[in-house]
Image (cartoon, rainbow, N blue to C red; front, top):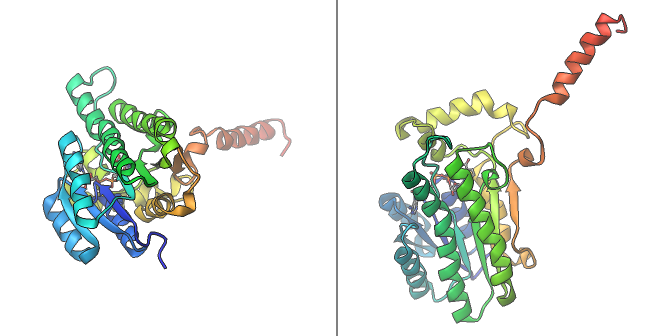
Length: 281
Ligand SMILES: NC(=O)c1ccc[n+]([C@@H]2O[C@H](COP(=O)([O-])OP(=O)(O)OC[C@H]3O[C@@H](n4cnc5c(N)ncnc54)[C@H](O)[C@@H]3O)[C@@H](O)[C@H]2O)c1
């Protein structure tokens, strides 16, 4: 028995680091999945690898008609919808607040946040048509909880996504439709290489370098893994989370629970110096 036996799920951004892990985990737990992305070759390959349990549907989440078509195609193929996972996203606009252009800002907001609303809109309409419960999941970010993790456009987009999830508890909760977000900390996927201008052919090497130099400095002594996210996504897709709604759940090893300063370490050093000065050691 799998946790998702008999369920039908859509996953956007399904060929990326997190989306792929979620797709594989959902299928291993018994779900049928519609993989949505703009990376068609990778989408078709992943779909073949998952066999009868998967279809690939080309979907640009920034286009309303594509999201509407994704839901319709999934229901035509698998007969119903139980889970909508809004996961596609970009970092985009690297500029600071003082330099960012309105067009770049709008692009990031459209791909990362308006898409989340479209996912709620069309999955929500389908759940209402079916007269069933449904679970909507969104990949937000620690940048949707705190400032200072990323650029202004990305931070604003993820805060907006979190806002849509909370509003859904009010608007869709009464119909038995749950919506929750996962807020990952840093997971070394291709999004990092893209964000820092590293060509994708160097992404694996870049990720290994960052893991080696910074991994130990993270809250739990390592970066997040895509499987860390897939586990929580499976819980939210399953009936185990039947009364969890409107929540933005950090999956960040504790990073957003702590302040980022080094006061605790610094005071030990200064106290030691003081004791030495006074001859107290
Ligand atoms: N990796 C992290 O550190 C991290 C942290 C917090 C949040 N997130 C979020 O997790 C989600 C997945 O990111 P990832 O780390 O797997 O990155 P990734 O770059 O590996 O995957 C992103 C996927 O989204 C797809 N995509 C991009 N634009 C699209 C569009 N317009 N329509 C459809 N698909 C599109 C890409 O083709 C890719 O497959 C994103 O929303 C990201 O913001 C990632």
